[in-house]
Length: 407
Image (cartoon, rainbow, N blue to C red):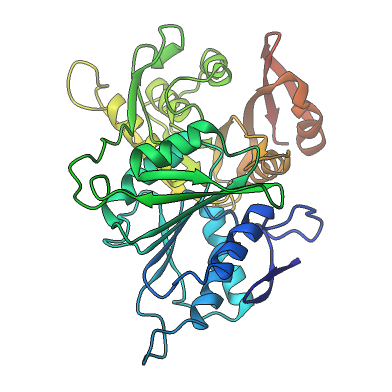
């Protein structure tokens, strides 16, 4: 746990899942800079405030405290709503825990996902610039109708996260934009909403998300089929080369098995398993709201009635969660996994390790975990420590497919 000092007090914050050995903080310099700017400019936070892209709830926790110090005249509490909008289930879990720890009321912050309908009116829009420019684009488009010419719009990011393309997005979708000098190794993005682009403005551009694209012809049962990508998921507009390699080397399975597509992304791997074995059942799991929505859409495309669809859709579940923490032990026959090695901007194998340990617990004896990853990540060593038995199924100069069997 770490103490986060803000203009409205200090808060003890953690990332999620909580791990006392985790050296990464639940906030960074961009959060500090943004909150200091709001305090220094005496920003009115009593209306509806939307916080987009909050990493671990640091901004939501601090602003919940700030709003208690700014009740409107003649009232005991803010008249608007404080809303956090995120794509991450883990962020929502962290936010709930950090708010409880800060002593905030349970209704101090309304938690929405990026797939939920945003508030009808937003007086203050705060944006932590995400790694994905596509996710930023989608969220600005979705929130522009809720803005008005008097709305305060402030973005924040590390200096390495604020590019000309970032500023162009704010400018194109919302209005005139400028950036501040660097502080705390971060910058702010200050945007003035244009009347013709926000609300019902006639110049509001079209949101290009989600996207649909045809898969290549060399990926097994998914060849030529349609994938759907919502903004923010990994390789939303094209099939990444790791998954392409994985699809060529998936195991051939038959019968009423339970298969899990762990970290499903757009769902092409789990959908391939469903097409190859209609007697089985597939569970798609991801911590991203957009990934679950993408996987559902990709699966529905594969089994839609008509010339391009399969004859019968097998049983499928779509689960938003932290790896396999909610899966019954010994209930799974096969786990298919292309683990990420980033958490926001941090390079870490923490997520992969949690996926591997969760898979081992969820698999029945004799069950298998199949993993694709970059060769240099050394997943085979971790899998041997966990499973004992792990072998290379396929490899090329960049990727390796590994098979680990639970004893």
